[in-house]
Each structure stands twice: as structure tokens, then as C-alpha cells.
Amino acid sequence: MGDPETSSLDPAVALPRPARPSLFLGLLRACRPKQWSKNVLLFFGLIFALKLTDPVLVGRAIAGFLVFCAASSGVYIINDLVDLEQDRLHPRKRLRPLAAGIITPGQAISLASILLVGAMVAGLALGTGFAALTILYVVLTILYSLRLKHVVLIDVFILAAGFVLRAAAGAVVVGVPISPWLYVCTVLASLFLGLGKRRQELLLLSENAGNHRPILEEYSLPLLDQLIVIVTAATIMAYSLYTFSADNLPRDHSMMLTIPFVLYGFFRYLYLVHQRGGGGSPEDILLGDLPLLITVVLWLLTAIVILYVSR
Image (tube, rainbow, N blue to C red; front, side):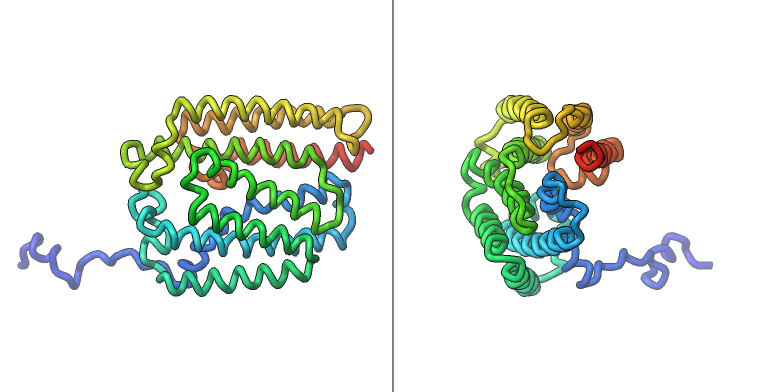
């Protein structure tokens, strides 16, 4: 009889290694499809301008959403190329297709080029104003990847600008006026998310934070916590003012019924950041935390009912 220990080492009976992800899946993951959830902002101009029942405008909003999905995926790939060595030091980002070696830099460059050129061409088909905002988003995000993410505080404002450009593009593509409330609430909410992202990165990487991203040496947990408190209060106050002072809302102030959803959403997010170590990836929190996802859906459905039924 053979020695059991010797037999267990026999290559013929060795356990199979996990299958390496296919090239297609690697390219798809490099596009970061989870982050396409950020582009839902393009529908807000349509919804809050009371144009959700216009099929033509809904079609244009969907087309704009797809353009920004392509554009954002293209710049995410460029960002991964720029941060390739730093990502390999990160406990989570090292699993990204480029950092893990699933796709090559050449393949990544080819995919990014196709996505960005396609987004520009499709954007022009939707109008010069929309195309200009798409190009501005791409240029600003690339500048962020190359330089601006290394400038303290400016890095967070650039992250917020990406959200604002999405919201503005959504209004432009359907030809509705851009409400100042859309700007204010989007800027503040995106600053909240950006500061939470920096906090989680600093906490996760601890003493290695500067090696992965030098700008993190300019931040501290007390500073970020204080900034988050300021932005949270300002966002809730701005949204509350919007619910009873915006021109296109019902005169009975019924939009104020959505304020509890916003309050709970912010409180839940802060709970996840401080107690669960979340915040590094807002889309993962939104899609992975059921109470928060339900809150966002209920807020949006309530707002739609109030806007379209109570007018």
C-alpha cells in the first residue's frame, strides 16, 4: 500500500487551482460596472423637471446614461494604468484586473481608447452642449488621475465635480433648465462621499497610506471627521430648504415628507463608515447594504409620487 502522505503530494491527485478569470471578464471588470450606478444622476434632471412621462426625453436620458458609462469606464481604466504600482500595494485594489495581471497595459489602453472615442462620437450625436460636458468630465477626470488627486482638498472637490457634471449633463441632454438646488445638493452630497472615501482609505492603509497615495499624508482622521460633520449638516439643511422653497414643487410642501429618508440615509451611511469600516467605495455600500438601498429607492419613489401626483 502506498504511503498516504506521499500519495497526497502526488501531482496526479493534487487539488485543482482556481480557474484564472477570462480575458473578457477581466476587461469587463476593468470597466468597473458597479460604478455605473453613479451615472443614475443623469436621470435626476428628467425626473425633477417633471419630464418622466415624455418617452422621447426618457430615450435621450438613457442614451446620455450609456455615454457616461462608456466615458467613465474609459477614465477608470486610465486611472488604473496611472496607479498600477500603487494599486498593487493596496489590499483591495491589487485585485483589479490590471494590478492582478489579468489584462495587459496594451489591452487596457485599447479598451480605454475605444470607450472614450465611442463616448465622444455618441455625445456629439446628442448635442454639442452634452458633448462639451462629456469632454469636460473626461478631461477633468484624467487631470485628476495625473495630477489633481495629489493636491490636498482639491482632490475631493474634483471628485465632487464629477458628480455635478453628471447631473448637469442629464439636464442638458433632455433640454430642461438646470436648477441651482440640483447643483447645491449634488456638490454637498458628493463632497460627503469623497471625504468618506478618503477616511476609509486612511483607516484601511494606516501607516502604509502614504506609500499607496501620498496625498493621504495630508489628511488625518480628526480633520476628515470634522469636515464630514460640516458637509453632512450643510447637505441636510440644503435639501430641507429645497423641499419647501423650490419653484416646481407642490405648494402644500408635501416634498418635505422625503426629508426623513434623507436623514436616515445619511445616518445609515455614517454608521457604515464608522462602525463597519465602509466608505471606500460608495457604490459597494449602496448596492451591498440592503437598508440603505431600500431607503434610496423609497426616497426616489416618494419624490416621484409627490411630484407627478400632487401637482
